[in-house]
Length: 95
Image 1 (cartoon, rainbow, N blue to C red):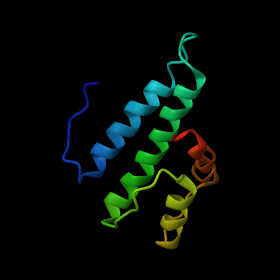
Image 2: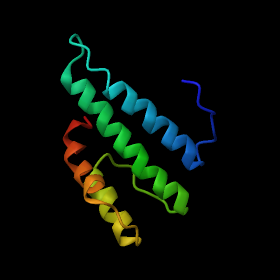
Image 3: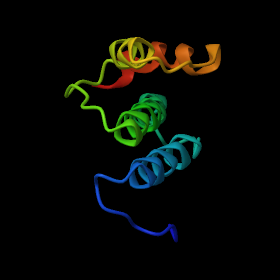
């Protein structure tokens, strides 16, 4: 990946890592377990959501529960489209 690297407290780094996981999720090779693809999709969503927390300067809990993270963002006044809120269904692939 040729994207610039940023410090861990920079939301751009969180988004870089989310994009990396998304690329892994899109591989779809027959020899790759589907669960592994779903895991990377979950990780991409989680890191993108956490990038918003970082951008807002708000702490976030150490959790892989996307529904909880999204709820906290909504409580913080962030509006998320339905497509983003649907990411909560990926939580089961976090483990």
